[in-house]
Amino acid sequence: MTIYLLPGLGADERLFQYLKLGDHEIIPIHWISPTPDDTIENYAAKIALQISGHDNVLIGQSFGGIMAVEIGKIMPFKKIIIISSMISSDELPRRYRIAGLLRLNKILTPGLLKRSHVLINWVMGAVDPLRRKLLADMLRDSDEKFMSWSLQQILDWKNRTVPPNMVCIHGDNDKVLPLRRAEYVIKGGGHLIVANRADEVSAAIKEILTPIEGS
Image (cartoon, rainbow, N blue to C red):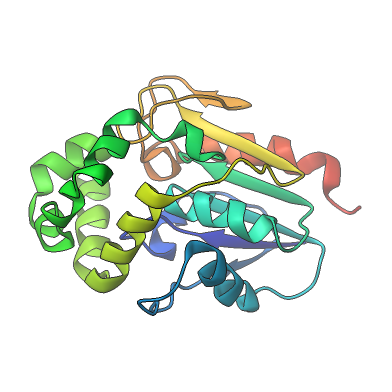
């Protein structure tokens, strides 16, 4: 079985390095530069070209989870697992909707996010020096144009379709996307559970995948 990984906004495959995913083939999906006309739907179709076969598992974290939902609407998976994310645009916190209407995301620029390490560490739940360095390194290496485009897509996202075979893992202390619904809840977990609560997330993933392994 092949597991494809979609990291969050401002992140890359390093985000998943602490997960224990067994002996499965692991393939990270890489973000590509969007065009100004790209919608989240046609961008999902573009990056889905990195996926081959039909007996796959897709894991997406945060914005990667949103993108996993969009990819799941156009191709089948044995299982889609979203971590610290949301399935429906109805789950987007109201404060973000208001920020989008006021275009406050034009003020909170990617450049500012890259520099505001104390605030970002607190919001993301980067609780130890190793995870703080990981977060800082990924933000430093991220593409600002992609981040700006992604922020706008999150605020504009309109989705109420739930793809089949989807499971959610979420922390109940997530300050970025507060818990709305999840089959697996990480008690006390923040937005970065995929890195700093990796053992618990890995255990949840193992439980999710066990019934379909070898099928």
